[in-house]
Image 1 (cartoon, rainbow, N blue to C red):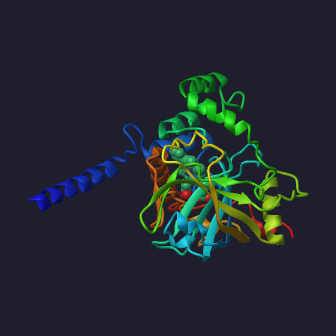
Image 2 (image 1 turned 45 degrees about the vertical axis):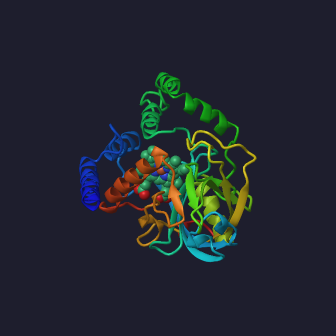
Image 3 (image 1 turned 90 degrees about the horizontal axis):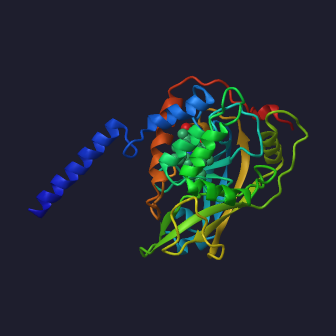
Length: 341
Ligand code: HEM
């Protein structure tokens, strides 16, 4: 009898899941297509490119775990040893030829470990907190920041209305302003911002946010033009490996999951090892161009929190991935072979 009820419940769960999928719902009102349409209405349609973080460059390297992360998580990647890494540096926005500016948010996507059950994917940015705390807020912020065709800048009234309706964004913006961007990609700290649970071998769950903290300064390029941040990164990577320490920030059970809210600065930090990036390539078939850095592709030992942004990200990244991989793509702005030396 109980088994029967369980079976019906399981069937309903699967069935409702299938209906939700068919209707394309993320939440009660939002669809993944609504996000795709919004990105495209702001940045135009650029077939073959990511609908957000469209400008980027592919990298590879490895992660050397020192074993200290195993205290928190049973994931294979935290056992002492080396895992291969495929990654991508990017700038936010849906324009694949946008001019590099220090104000544009910088991204780093990483797939750590061989493809399969043990791989850990993460897409991080160089901000201390995220500006919004819901998928609805993300969509509303995109609309408010759409440039007015007559001025080329966001409509100040629309932005003021958005901030009045979203005090969490106004507060997060203050925190972001206190952490101005560093000169380049190489000296940027890239953070998860969303909260996850690390699950130890004995089943203990700990809230964690992580950051990759740079071990070098960024060397400027002598070049001028629209690609100065990427040119500097490519030149520095061609000259030698770049390194980041992985800091696992250990949360208290009542620390906020809301990514607009920073955690107290005194939280314990475990340095779990070193990320070493040593090759850089133009986006091309077979490299990070073809990876979906879905933040819910997690190995056993890392679990998502109930932050609603995570499931929205997963759904929208999949829609962007499906669209772009089915389209012809023009060459990427950053042609690594054309960046000397
Ligand atoms: C509701 C919130 C968000 C939406 C709708 C969204 C949407 C997207 C989309 C459509 C892509 C392109 C995916 C692809 O084609 O592979 C993307 C890429 C990316 N996003 Fe988000 N995003 C959100 C939140 C975030 C957050 C919180 C972070 C960081 C903490 C982030 C960091 C990145 C990065 C680094 C990439 C580029 C990854 C790559 O190189 O493929 N995003 N985002």
